[in-house]
Image (cartoon, rainbow, N blue to C red; front, side):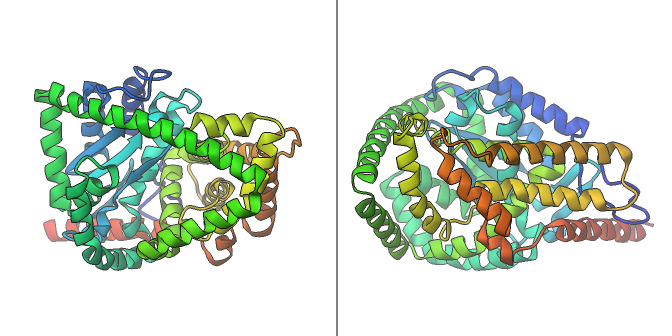
Amino acid sequence: MGLYNRERVIQEVYFGNSSELTNLQKQFSLFRSKYINNTVFNKKINTDPELLKFNRMTEDFFGFKSFALIIEPELELNACTYPISYRLDTGLGKKYLESTKTGFKFKKEAGYSCLVYMNSSFIVDSRFSDREVFAIILHEIGHNFQATLNPTCTGFSIIAKFVNILTLIKDIIVALILPFGYAGGKSVVGDFNALTDLTIQTTTKLKKEQPATVEMFYGIKNIIGVGKGVFMNALIALSAIGVITNPIVSIATAIYNRLASIALQPEQLIYSFFGYQGEKVSDNFASIYGYGPDISSAMLKFRPLGAGYSMLEAINETPLLGHLYNLFTLPVDIIFSLFDPHPADAARANGQLKYLEVELKKSDIDPKIKKQIQEDIDSINKLIDEFTDIDMEDPYVFKRIYAAVLLKLCGGDIRELFGSQNNKNFDKAVERSDKQKRLNDVKIK
């Protein structure tokens, strides 16, 4: 599927599930099928030939020079990337963006490389469908397109480059002190497109030719991951005891620790303030490929599941204990949300709903696309209704009530009062691409 009747008017930016994207999804599912319900700590997962094939297919689909999905051995449900537009040796990417019948992609001459990190907890947890996990990958890839699709993200990318120059020395020092560190090494690599490409090319060659070396490295990371998991679950248990027995002190301590963290890393405030729009763009990026319901359901379920930690999940599932814990941590969640670039979970689902509703109202929509958009809308409406359904026996009920109130008042997140939908921004991106194609045709003639 693609854009309908480009020669007259851009009608909708909803590409849906093209055959090429379907094949990419199938390849990811083939890779993931080997690991579902297995241990989080598997040293062979990153050398799997099916994963390497998925990486090459992703390069072709999105126009990357090189791409790598890196599976980190971690219990926490998380994924991340380092946007191309933040790097010190790239532009903002607008002149290299093109719109095709299958979606947005970069022209190969851009030479852009993309790293996406996903914790193995997402790969092995069968409570997340293949489509949900793939939607999260699309979200992370979307961050690499955000500066080309939204003017706020374009402006923030310029600020991010400046901040990265100031923090580069610190990142290098951290990387040297903690060479196997998740954040330190990734940040330094992510600061430069050339270094990202070199890292992907080198590690890909190692995975093919010397898999035992790579597996030994991940064997060490597995040991670290096991220790970290034990520590974090114990910390959560102690925190839960403190929250329930002395909620006021626990709330004050959590706020103090967060403010102290910001004082040590003031750039967090910049990313928190400007990053919200980038998250919305990346969620919508998944939606335009037909994954709106999947990114929504993934975001709505992972916190009640304990975000990957068995201790937190056990607390959430325990009657009375879960009620008290979620009630007492709600004030902290509300305050912390002000410093978090990510929209509230219900707001993320609602954002996909609003994007698709606008697309559905556009005129002259291809009937097949209209049907798929309507199905996506119906699915998301059902998800939101289920998430905000009030059941007093549910330990997560207080947070669901809060989410329902925010949905009613401001679309799920107070920042939605000052935000806007991305439909027009995506339309303009397609128009720029089509205009450039016409200019190129004229030059060729």
